[in-house]
Image (cartoon, rainbow, N blue to C red):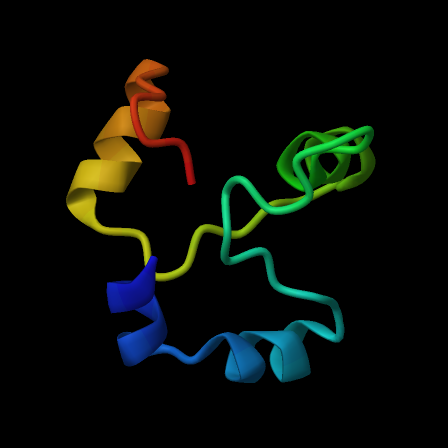
Length: 67
């Protein structure tokens, strides 16, 4: 989210991880939707920063605003 990028800039996460950082849930709407393609490809997905609200949603399978 925009607020998360104020806390930890996406460039910082890209440098630390050595990979691109997904910041737009709906990027690449077309033949290959980025967040779906990455979910199929990735072995690990980090949600940073993860608030208690996001952790609770992930633990309970709530995807009303999937990160």
